[in-house]
Image (cartoon, rainbow, N blue to C red; front, side, top):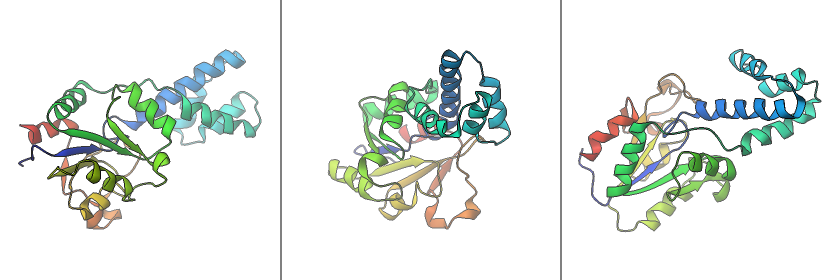
Length: 219
């Protein structure tokens, strides 16, 4: 497919540019390490056991450390505000570098401002336009951030959105005439990609099996 030289590439963040599961595991390691310093007890095993059993991880932390359940509020903010130990794969780094060199690049993501900006910093993506739901007072599929990018790049003849979540990532850019590309789940995504759960308007115009296939659009 021919990509216009004025195209603006816009990406979702979690489970598109990097696996959100990596962030989750980073948060668990951070909690375990920090709590070990505070309470002199290593509970990483209990955390991972709770996670694998689909139990409430924060409940199990409180039980393991004999803490009141009210402590969960502090634990969740520790998790949300930690600087994650996450990184891009070489393929993703190379492709994003090529896009930054030849096209305009931005990120539209839902989440808390500090959490999402910590992720972007850890991934080495500083300097990229990032529009975060908490800072804009809306979540996808709200249109404000998509329209904002169209206004910022008035000379662009093509907008491309790359995401993963079929419940919210694609319906708005589809309605706005953007090219939408879905990155298929390899079995670790947080959100389901069961296409039977949504109407066709929510689906991307095309699917790719992996992020590396974006190279085909850049040749």
